[in-house]
Length: 390
Image 1 (cartoon, helix red, strand yellow):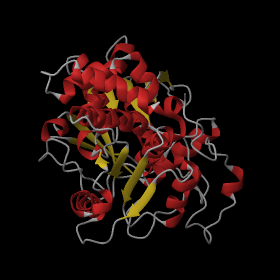
Image 2 (spheres, helix red, strand yellow):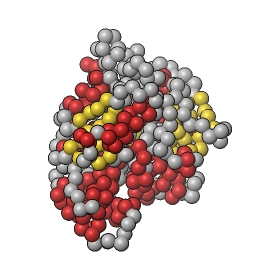
Image 3 (cartoon, helix red, strand yellow):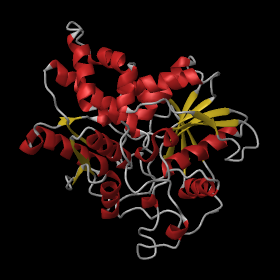
C-alpha cells in the first residue's frame, strides 16, 4: 500500500515541477479517491444526539469522529494527512522514507502506530513523563507494539513544553532519529485538515448557532470549526470548554466566560480514574498548563466564548452517555455538557465526539489500582488496532 501511495504522490509531484507549494499539491492529492482510500480518510457523519442528551428544547448535532475512526480516534485523519505532507516533501527530494516521529497524547500515538503498522514503517513518539505506565502499556497493547514510545525527562519547562522541547532535541541532535520525519502535528494539524472542515460544512443544510470544541493541539478548531464558521459567514459562534483548573484562553477580556453549576454527582464514586500525580485533572486532550504556543493568534481570535466546567459536569455526562449506549471519551463528554447547556437556550449546537470510551479511563488510581466498575464497563474497543484496510 505504501508503494502505491508513494507512486501516486511522486507522479503528481514530478508532473508539476513548477508547483512549489506543498499545500497546493496536498490539496490536489487529498481529493484523489485512491489516496483517500489508502489513507482511510472519510468525512464523519453529523448526527442529531438531542434525544440522547435529553434536550427540552434546541438541538445538539455531533460530528461522530468516534464512529468514523474507531479506536484510533479523531487524530487518524490528522496523522494520515501529515504523512501525505511528508511524502510530498520526500518525493521532491526523490526519497522514499517511511520513518516518522511525533509527540503528544494518546490519540495521536495510536493513529501513528496504525499507519506504521499498515505501511510496515517505523514510528517513534514522545510523551510527557506524567503519563503513567498503564497508559503506555495500553498504547503498546492496542497498537501491537508498532510504535516506540519515549517519555521525555523533566526539563523544568512545564507539563507540555517538556515533551515538545524533548521532541525537538531528538530530531535535531540524536543520530538514531536522523532519518525520522517529524510530523509536527502540534504545528500543522489544523492547516492540513481544513479539507475535513469544508466537507463537514457541506453536510450542514443550515448554520448552527454555536460550534463547541475543546482545544489541545488545535486541529479541530483550525481544521474543522473555523472552516464551518467561515462557510456560514461567521454566524456560528465558537465556544471552547475548559476545565476550571486549566483556564488557558485569555484574550484580555474579549472572550465571555460562563461558569456552570456543580453537577448532581449522578455517577458512581469510582467512575473514571483519578489523574496521575502532577496533573490537575483527568480530561485528556486539552492542555493543562499552557495553550499550544504554535496555534496562531488569528486562529485563537476565532473563538467567541469560553465555558468553564467542573469534574462533576463531564463525569455525569460521560456516565449518562455510557448508560445510553454511547460510550465516549472525557473531553467529548465535556463538549456535550456545554452543547446541551447552550442548546437549551433554544439554539442549534454543533459539537465533536472525538473518540470512543477507552478501558484506561477505569480502574487506575482508584481503590488500589482496581475497581469493581471495571468489571461492569465494556469499552468499545478491540484488543488491538485491528488489521489495516487493504
